[in-house]
Image (cartoon, rainbow, N blue to C red; front, side, top):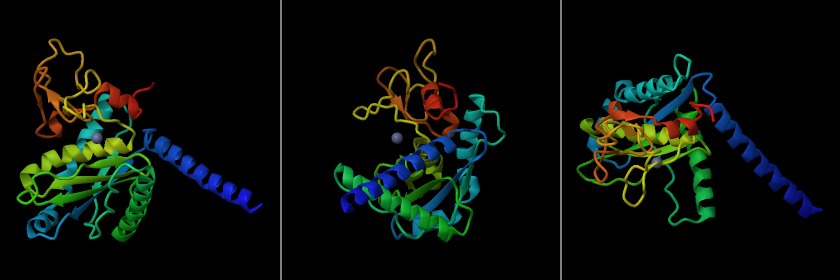
Length: 257
Ligand SMILES: [Zn+2]
């Protein structure tokens, strides 16, 4: 009897989780009303440069993310006036939970659970209306940190954790990473070769049908780099040089299957 009850409870919890993931997926990619994204700045370490950078951050610093997403949505014939709203939220003092070392499934599940609870706490503390997608941006002082950890965007939980640089001249490239992780939360997949970082042809090309194929001029957002020729791949300077390609548009349901 107890055993059956335990199994029933477990199935119920799994059922609720599956339903809420399905509901999140559907409600964030139906594109019939504005999708709200919140960007939460965080100082990765306790240094003055980063703190000063965050204090100077304003909506202006991230406005190109919303412009990019809405411009691309409209290019893919999404009809509503403002498909995405990207808003700057107050700085969060608490750091997000560190990722579990290794690839254990249980460790990852535990981490993603902690991340969801962290996101809920941070939104509540902000005192502002909760956004549907929460992106936590950890800013690092570039004079101490040349390479930052990998950024992530999770569709299950609608949370992103981005590592970025606290320098004015790096704001445009930070925003490319933020846009990339937002699209992960909407179900877009990476379109580059993890070994060589080359964009995958054709899905990682903004203009796969271009004749001649090289040089490409735009970067596909989920590829992260564009092909200058068959062996040279460059990163875009800003979201002005980035596009949402046909494969990504299909994944996030901007175009019908
Ligand atoms: Zn990615």
